[in-house]
Amino acid sequence: METEGTLSPETLEEAEAAFEAVGPTAQEVVRETAKAMEFDREEYHERVTSEVVQRARNVLFADRLAVSVGTVEEFEAWVDDHPEYNVERKGSDEVDRAVWHVAPFVEAVVVATYQNERDAAVGTLRRQAFGEIYRPRFESEE
Image (cartoon, rainbow, N blue to C red; front, side):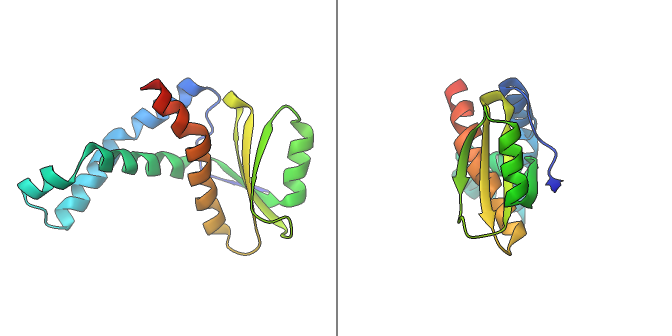
């Protein structure tokens, strides 16, 4: 089993702090992208909305999430060791590999199974974990 990513917040407060911390980077990424697309000042102000920056921040946060990569058997062993966690499953039962993200502050784990496309599974799982675990809590705090 391996881990990709570094962000595994133990509390909602840690998650919120990490989310806030990527805000300036998201703004800079959007600004540089708009510059590369040769937006003039007017087009920039018209098209680069707070929603555009927010989406960039969502991606930057999700991309840092720690994801365990292993076999379905390794995941099932983890579940056996953590019976208090709610498991949200994605994917097929007919494959051998799994990726999962653990969110201790809500006692939840999101898992996706896959056969061959590891990078795609990791990326998809991160988006799902963000959408199911983090985004609703960040939005309720606003």
